[in-house]
Every structure is written in C-alpha cells, then in structure tokens.
Length: 544
Image 1 (tube, helix red, strand yellow):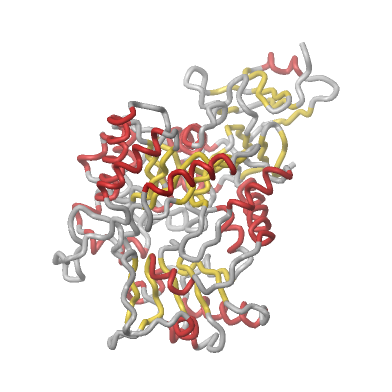
Image 2 (image 1 turned 180 degrees about the vertical axis):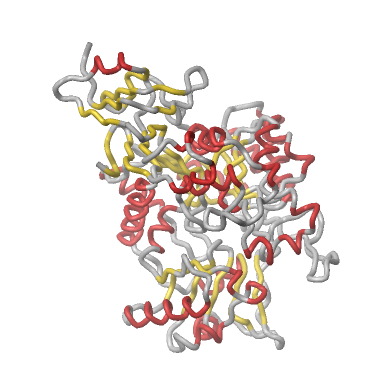
C-alpha cells in the first residue's frame, strides 16, 4: 500500500460520521484523508510519513465560522482596541495612550467598547473630548451597530441639533437636540464617511493578521459576512482576491456580497458580475448578505410587538426593517433563481419572520435549489416560526456566545423585551429539536472568535468567565456533540464545503488537534481546552 504523508495515531479521533463517530487513527495523503480507523491505519506509515501521537489529545474536523468579519477584525487589532474591558476609565486611558502614540493619525479609530459601561448604553462626546479634544475620534461599539464620536468629529460631519435622523439610524441627543456623541446604526455613516479610507495594503495586512488568529483557534474556513462598503467600513474583497491569487490565503473562505439596502433589484446584475470576479482558488463569493434589522440593545431589531419602556409599558417602537418585507420576498426569489445563497442578518422576531417569508417565496417560485439560505443571529424567534426552518430548509446560523446572562443582556435587553419575549431568545434547543440544521459563527470582532468559548456557552448557557451565573433559559441548551457539529459539519455545509466538516476517507484534511478530549471532561470545562495544531488540506497552519 502507498505510504501516507501524515498519520495520527493513539486517538481519540472524533469523526462526526454518524456511522462511526469514533476512531483512533487517521491517515492523510496530499490534501485528503485516505484512511480512518484503528491499528490497521498504521500500515500506511512509511519512511517519509509524519506521525502525530494523539495520546491525551483529540483530533476532530477543523472548525468553520459561518459569520465573521475577518478583515475588519484583523484591521482593528492594529487600531485603538477597547476590548477586554468594561471600565470607562480604562477606555479613556487607552484612547489617550493610542492618540499620543500615533500623532500622525488624522482620525483616531478603533472600538470594542461595551454599552453596559455607560448609563443607558450611551457614551458622551465630552468624555472623549477630555482625552482627545483636537482630533476627530470615532470608535465602534463591540457589536458595530453604533459608534462613539467626540465633538470634533461631529463638527467636521456638520451634525447639529437641526440634523435629521437618517431613515436607518438614530443620532442620540442632549436635551436641546445637540448630538450627544452616540450614533446608532446608519447614523454612524454620517461621520464615518469622513474617515480616511484604508489602503489595499492595510486590508491585506488585516486579513493575514486575522487568518493567523483564526487558525490558532482551530478555524480552517469561514464566511465573511460583508463584502462591500457600509457605514464607513471599507470593502475587504480586494484583500481576499489578492491573497487567493498569491497563495497567502490558506483558509477556505466564502464571501457574502453586501446588499445595498438603499437600492433594489437593479443591483443584482452587479452582484452576478462580482461573484464571477471574486471567485478564485480558496475564495468564492456566492452568497449575498441582506441586513434586515438592527440589534435589540438600541431598539432597532425588528420585533412583532413594541419594545417596553423603563416602566414596563409598551412604546411606539417595534424596531426597523431595513428592506421592505414585500420587496425582500421578490429580491430573494430572484437571487435564489440565480443560485445565490442569501445570508440574512435577522435578529428580532419580525426580521426572522420576514426572512423566512422570503425563503418561502423563493421556494414557491423556484422549487428547492439547494442554495442553503441561512439566518444569522436569531436573538428572538417567535415560537410559531421555529418549525419553519426545517420545513423550508433554512439554516439557523447561531452565535452561541451571546446566549448568557451578562450586564448588556440583563440591563439593556431583557427589561425592554419583557419576560415572555425574553424567553424566546437564542432558542438553540428548540431549533435543534424541530429538525433545523444548525451552523455556528462568532461575528468577530463583535465577540470572541474562539469556537470553544461559543461551544461552551451553547452547552452550558453560561459565560465561561461567569461560571456561577444562573443558566440562561436552560431548556435551550444543546448537547456537546450537537454544538461541535454546528461549528464543523454545519458551518461547512453553509459554506458549501461538502467534503469538509467530518473525517471520512476522501474528505479534505482540514483538521484540528485539541489538548484534551472535551467529550470526556465536565461540560463546565469546555472553554479551558486549547488548540495545539490546525491543518488545512493536510498542511500545518498553526502549531507544531
């Protein structure tokens, strides 16, 4: 028998093959798995074979992230980083230090601040003025649905008490109407349009920086959830295409082309042309991203009933549907007919329903074409709509790390949803029991890209950093094997990689080695596991 290039021995090997879920050995030749089994696989070891002893470790399929902003995340690592803290004084010190270290920067940009750090989730311009009064500052919050601006930035943008709110956003204001420094959703674009654009070199560096991080977390492929320009964010497409052509893109990447919500069906021919232009090597752009609503914390997620106020009474606000629901059905049917996948941002229960209605319209118009449409985020799903995912073949693209009690959830979300609707949040268990296919992602840089942390929360419904916190709607927990499957086979399915996501002969050798067998450890220890090695197509891209 021909010798293998790489053999893993002395298991455990988690195959995610329902017919044989466990093995102890696996062989790789070239880019593909050539054998999965036990001692008999050792017969493929020859003089040139690399042998990896798995004693005490776990081999499983490489993770895939079904919703991430890799270039943006990698670029932000080089900007003013406010993540890993919720302390306002720490934010201000970091901003001051960054501005002093970068006197050449015309604008101070970056982000990662948390809404829980500020009263009502609303930071003020005066706080930024206290550390950077002379240059414009614009910092995205951690979910990237809002931004914090100083007075200089607001002045340069011409924002005053007389400036109207855009249709897709809101300018937070002081008592006399003066912009207070917080911009929500589309209002961020009023200022971000002035920020100097990144260069092609910046974007490529951001991609490669992100790729190193994602590989270190066991991620072998992903779907970039926004290829286009939006709210001051630069189009990352050129970085992917450059890296795909020069061979520096080692991950397998699907790109979701941005649907401009200010336009309609006239943009579809442009998307067709972009799909052809941006398909090269390990990069392809066969998905279209439609952002149907905002987020719950700033009351822009689209709900079937109004948000509550601080006293528990109904308001007049039910959130925003960014694309007219009737038009959405036509757009999705047209995209489906052209074999685009549609990647929805659907966070509130009305947005989820509108997206499912659009998938239903596509099925009615075109039949089932297997385009794997998926709805991301799914914070609030009306119980009447849970079973529709399986019925329509719509994939539930979950971000598990958010399904836990933490201040932003407990102080800025649950009180304004009300008890009944709050219990509909992140219904992973209900979706799984109804027969829905689950894929998983991080939405990094909104939250940590570490799949093991997301898996931990999916199983425990507790933040790994708060093990004593009460369980977040425990009936929606899922088992560890289902959570692992969502991050591997489920996301590989969404990303169109049918020969990845499980360890079968003939499949791509996209693999990850963990430092322990997480299935043999207590569930509350899942997030403690670490990635030792990551392989893409049999090539080591992390560890060694």
